[in-house]
Amino acid sequence: MKDVICAGDERDFKFLELLVAQMFKEPNKKPGIAVVIRGDEGVGKSFFVERLCDLIAPYFFRTSDPEHIFGDHNCQLKNVILHHLEEAVWPGGKKTESLLKHLITGPEIPINDKFVPVYSVPNHLHLFITGNPDWLVATGFRARRIFALHASDAHIKDFKYFAALQEWFKSGGDAALLHYYLNYDINAALSELGLGDIRMVHITKEHIEQQKQSMSGVKEWAVNWVELGEWPYGEVREGHCYVIKSLLCHDYNNSPLGKRQPLTERQFGIQFLGLFPLVIDGLKQNAGNGRVKSAIRVSAPGASVQERNSSGKQADAYDIPPIAELRKVMDFNFGGESDWNEKENGVSDTKTIRLI
Image (cartoon, rainbow, N blue to C red; front, side, top):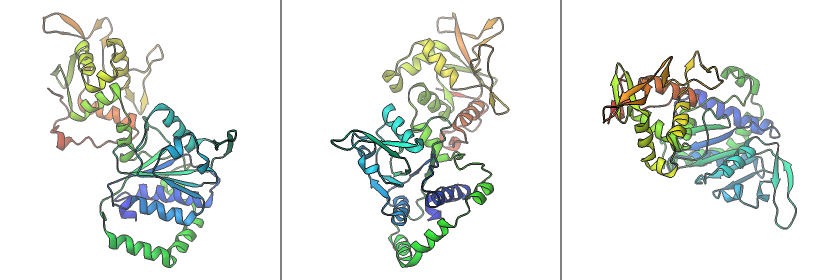
């Protein structure tokens, strides 16, 4: 299953193995991490989790209905160690996101049975989420509650491959696998991965994709432009792009995202500048007033950044660094390197910014 769940990434597989072993060796200890596996139908992502359910039975609960987790009645979560949310569509919303975070890290679960007062039980849930949709779980910049993987299609609908695995499992492989997990050296694995604690999960490329899918408003609008490698209404000089502030705000407000969440120019500016912190030696730089400095320049000592508008008048503008620098800043926000698809979107020289 390694070539399906963690194709080509030994570190990802080792960390997944560590999380699974910890669930069997120390079921009463929560790692504070949910495992998210996304992939096309038939690649085998659910097959992997189902075998874990077989090993830990009867202490598992499997469902494809998010209401069984986030709905009004959740007595099915009692006495559960492994919870598999399978092929479910993420419902979104702040309330749902908050409930998910609590299930992953909270020490207790409030249980709402029918016709009895709400009561709490110890939270021993180890959450596995599998599915096909692009957006499986809400996660913000540098979120550390998610370990996300993208399943390979190397054995998509390969019925003989999975039938052979199932036969091995039924003919003694289950006992061998359980013995392996129960005798797994957690401390040695942490040392090999260079981690002091199992909660120090590294950010995978799939985790970054889930961060992008979780975005909305100015975040999503700006990341789309950084992905494309261009800015609207700007003029490029020596690699920097100069854009009149009101025009950039106008472009956002007239986009589908902006029409859902319109902003004033000031509101837009605060959010836009905050997306691109000035990072030196891996640290955000703070201004004198305690705010984080932005890599995008809006003013210099004694002078504002200004450009001439279509009427020939001076207008306040943004001085936006080269796209390669902005992508590094976004990677800092994500906590890892994103695939920016430079060959696909035609950006061959990231020292300049293309304009529409």
